[in-house]
Length: 250
Image (cartoon, rainbow, N blue to C red):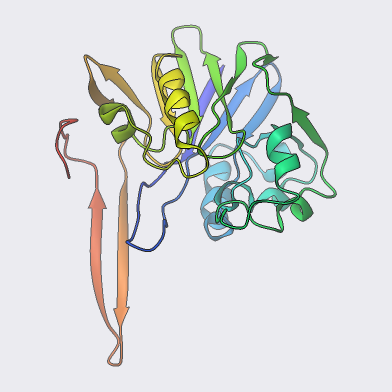
């Protein structure tokens, strides 16, 4: 059993919209090579590079677990036409006619899935591979499902956007729960009680020790804002290389 972090999630927002990148993970177990979500189209080169660094090509991915059908989790599905796609039945059925104010579920998502081998997961928790169990986490979306993976030494909770970032854990409140906030709160509590190490939808993996977050990896992002008309750019670096306490508001 092996879990690799291909792309760490970025919990970024503006006052108008979210623009952070979701976490993409690779799970290898029981002869399966499983991609956990596929990410938005704009990170395609980074995803391909991350797979290549592990000695893998898209054709080596035989299974994709789609936690839910929001645009930022599904747009690279066409890279893996040979893979079996596992996704919640409730997500698939809802995506046919999403409610008008749902900005997360795009009207084209069923079209993306049209010619792909899809296995629909029921609304019940089950072991889908040895040591890999589904976890029902609705609220962020209508039927989001995560995974609990028994690595042999600990239980890893792959919670996707039911646990948007580590701040959800320290505040005990879901940060992005626009579909059903009450269900999202129950799901956050369930996710945090389900394991020992946590993989959020838009943050780095972490452990909780006496309520304090211990991140398992670091990252650095460089943001550039070009200004017109003279073309100056304003750059911002985001680095996690300095250890920070869980209560630090930055």
